Structure formats: structure tokens, C-alpha cells
Image 1 (spheres, rainbow, N blue to C red):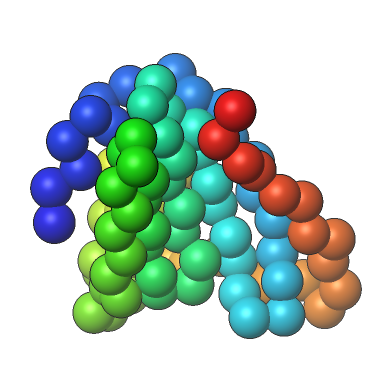
Image 2 (cartoon, one colour; image 1 turned 90 degrees about the vertical axis):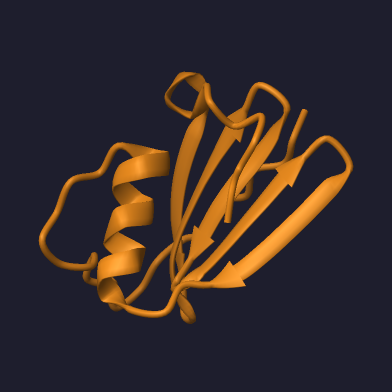
Length: 90
């Protein structure tokens, strides 16, 4: 999946939250939003929304690196209780 228009991801605003269904990372881009919730990667570029389920842990870790700058060998561990915050394109 190509995310054209999302080249300035690391310059966006990143928020992390957790929900019962898994870790959520969202980052605003110059022209939209990228969200990784569990294994689902969603993008908004202008009025175009896309979503895909990443096939495995390696693909999820690659998305963390590419879009959020997180480098890890394992997926984040979810806390027993968490507060959810939201990010909306502004």
C-alpha cells in the first residue's frame, strides 16, 4: 500500500493511547492522518481514506518504524488499564 502525501510523517503530531482492543498510534501529517490500531493501518489523505490489516508481527513492527519512528523487536505490551485519547485532523 502506498501512502502518497504522507512523506512528512515525522513532523506531525503523534499521540498514543491504548484501548481494550489494543495499542493505538496516530500521527497527523501535512495532509491527513495515519493510525495504527492493533494490526489495522488506516490513512486519511485529504478526502481519501484507506485501511488494511497488516498480515503479521513483522509488518506491524515495520509500520511502527516507518510511520511513527518506533524501533523495537517486539510489539508493545498493553497495560491492564488505560486511558484513551483521540486525534482528529485539524
